[in-house]
Image (cartoon, rainbow, N blue to C red; front, side, top):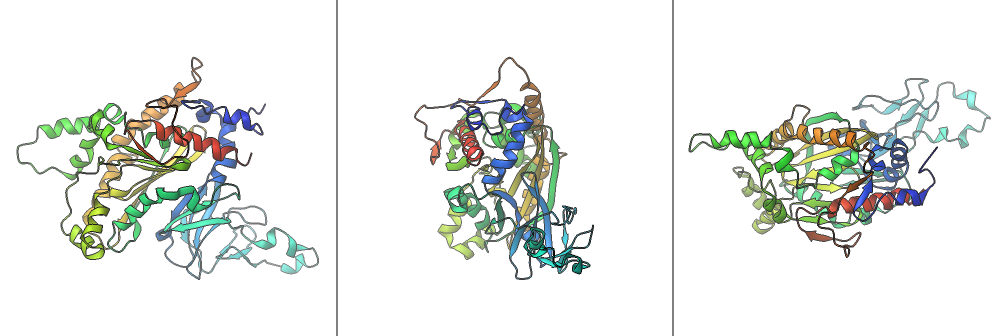
Length: 437
């Protein structure tokens, strides 16, 4: 029997001020409702337009569990189309990326479609004469996602008419994207270095929460980053600190470091760690880079851009970006207990190659299927996924530094170890989950 479908009050009752019910992580019916409502009512990341640089280029992904194609058409515009032939429902392509040429062709009956999705041709079209085909859904071709926004190269889509407009949904949180992009002397990024993907046997929200959880690094990562720290202590005096050590060591910073780092909370579930400083603040300078930035922006503006060292910016519902090292992680929901994680790296156009080298090294050491730090988190997620089936307590606590006067949908800078941002995400979950039920 369905517990939550059509029952708005039951869904809202799963999120309290300082705790959330375990069903948010373990209930498959609730997961399916998330795909129908939450992921359809919010602006979900699709991809970067540098993945489709030429006319006919496409990239296949999902919005929630809906298969879509990001396509560059002949006019240079980027469209997002549902990856489903309007005839028999066959996926037009199962390849993750490629070039369609001048049109898409369904492999089942050879219906073909222009790059904007409109119907181009049907074999034996005379068979549809006098049938009213011209007024059918099929005659419209590949369905377009109606709400699409390309923000400085980053493409987002919203499947439903319900919800907020792009600017209202993101608001000032877009400043994290701006800072990452402006780190290029010409203000452009390109996807570079491929993508690292691996499956996590846990709910997608666990990964989103973890991005602003600053009380776990010195505990969960002691076996990995802590080991690197101990090894480095035995290096001969005067040894130049390797890039990998610069990446590892901040994970072992004490609680006081993270408290002072600060967290900024934005409306609609967005927020970031690293207001005053972050684990990326003390990386070695890259020769020639500041001079390039100064030439492009002027010294004051260049300094302001590079002094901003936000740690993790969460964009609700399911991505995180790291501006200082040009990285994006996409937490793609598969089932209540299964999430595909993608880690994308970007090149700062016209910036020194050593910046990309550092980005790629960070991604490989922290986020890869062969990583050392990321697997600490993965073990915690999977232990939590198992533990949440325990009947002794059905609630998850997010009470740290809670104040009853805490406002929903506020913009606030607060203590770097607060769980306010997690509460912010769950308030957004309840808001966007129920607005179309």
